[in-house]
Image 1: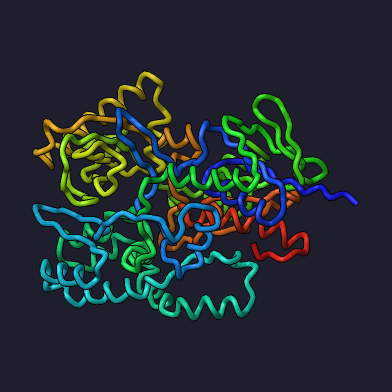
Image 2: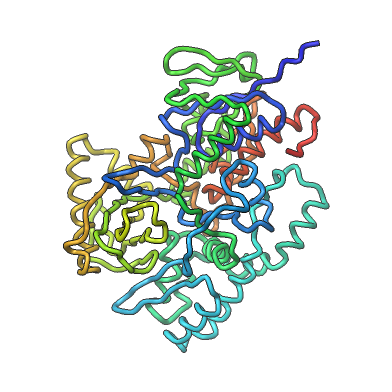
Length: 497
């Protein structure tokens, strides 16, 4: 009898791919990951410029509470553990309007007092909002097994732990963030409610995001996104996995309705018993395999850009030649910025002074973000290389002007490190329309979720943030685990990994 281990090939070395590789090894398979870039991490990435580090992913990591099942997943893949150091931050973000500012603090009582002090007439609505954030603190992402593998006992336990979430859904599940803002009379509180997420997002998503911070389940690991990705890559290799970088996959080889392996861009082949695609689903269905295999609900979401928009951004990072003490993340008004046919008059800046490893002593990195969507991506994509370079240069300059107008003390202390557009995410990660999250859940649209399998092709599984809204790192890391559990279930083995 052969003692050969079955091989799992994972396409994509981002968080989902690394997770899938690690769990495949843990389940007793051989595992190889093929990543098109020179380093793993996908969108969980950072890079260095002129002695500074630009972090481009983790603003907060869901699953940092050791009592949460997601924490155990992060620990298993080597991302965090009991000794992980986190940034010392006390707030979510600050919104400014017409000279006034309010902050969502990690301390809910402090937030409640500040908002009531700002707008006594909104007291009843403020107190209700705070109470429902407390309810939303209990919302957790299923991380032990996929929901379709859960039994009655699993659902009862999940329902018990999230007993108050139906209240949140009833009150805030059918309104957008913009509509939530309109419940308040104060202009600055209105903006506070729809600054962080796109205003068309369902309001409950915002409450869950804030509740993740206030509950202590959304901390920021020090050293940044790239360091976390590399810790996961090290864990994979230490366990015996093989990581192929600078190895672009051209096709998934399908024979007799079974995934047999992959063909690489250099023409070589790699065979496998099971293939896990951990790349953008728009790239999987249409590039790696035929579009006809795409699940109907997913295809409808890609076709309906109004009901299922995506979020991306034009961003710039700056070196600040001072120990800039502005709040962590600040949203503020500015003179209009034009991108294509659209105009923007509100931007945000994030101060990374909480992580001293990102800049020389006494200095810091400041990152600005101009939120973009499908329409903006199409504008950037329509430009010739020369037009693109000029539009990027011009917008970067205008963004810098807006920042120094808001913070005049930075006028002689700011230096551009880098800037990037929605096309950057597409080029580097094959991200659909440059999105760094999954589909936005809008009011009236069904939350995107599909099993990570491909009907019509056996032994092909799907991981990544696109299998479940709203996407992001938590969905990515559990999806890698879930893909391996699906292999085990098909083989009639225990899914406990």
